[in-house]
Image: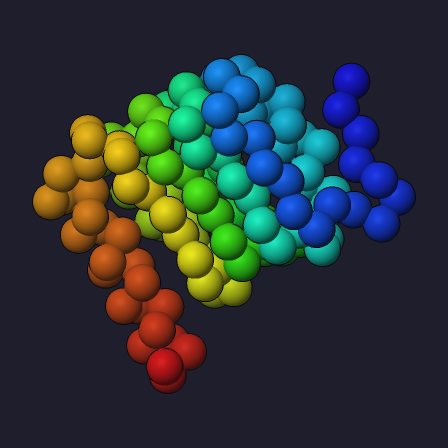
Length: 124
C-alpha cells in the first residue's frame, strides 16, 4: 500500500523503476490528495496510453498542480502527448519529454499549441 505523509510529498522521483500504466494508476490514486507536490519525475519507465490518460485526469483536477513534470524515456506517442497537452496545468513550469521517439511533429504541435494558449491566457 502506498501512503503519503500527513502533509504530503514535495517531490517524488520514480525514474528507472519499471513503473507501468497499472502502477501509475495506483500511485496517482494516492497522489490526488497531495496538495504540495511540486516535482514529479517518472522518467525511464513504461508509462503509455493508460498511464498518461490517468495522469492527464489528475493534472486537470483542482488539487494536484506540480511545477515540474518529467516523463522522459517512456512510451509516449502522439496520442499520449496530445492527452497530456490537453491537461497541462497553468502552474506547470517545466515539462520534460525527451527520449520519447514516438512523438512526431503532430504530438509536439499539440503540446506547443497548449503552451501558447496558456501563455496567452496568462498574458505572458
